[in-house]
Length: 170
Image (cartoon, rainbow, N blue to C red; front, side, top):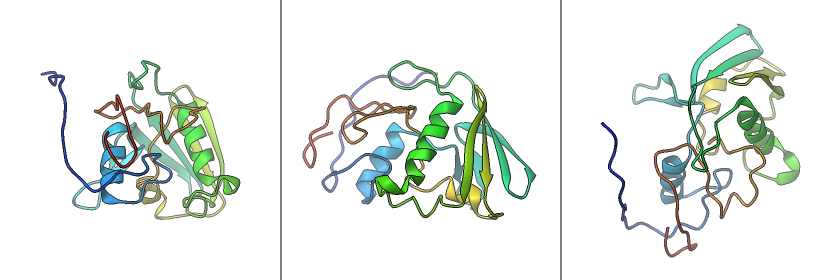
């Protein structure tokens, strides 16, 4: 059954920032989670569960290979690809951009699109918490090349932002 289109109205503390790399308040995280999605997430029993990645494998202690779901589209109609995942995590770990996640992902030596729907992460050292790191509130996948992520919202989540006025209306 398809969801019915409509308008969702909620009240919350002011939403100042919804660039996933910079969200900090509960309200901002809530909105970002409605607009974007993760590779993997953590369920109520603290288990890693699929989101945009339908499967993953760890062929050795420092290599993780993720297979993305087919048919996922961004709100602008473009398909999700491995390049989007690579771009997102390169952005999150770029020290020059100064995002709070740069140290969280500093253990990533390389990220490569090894297929249209396959991404390979190579770590500098084994990290038993790597899958949990991928479910950090900031690890929501953006379209590769996204500019102005704080004002243009093009995600794969269930809700699409049609207008945004910082600290006023979303």
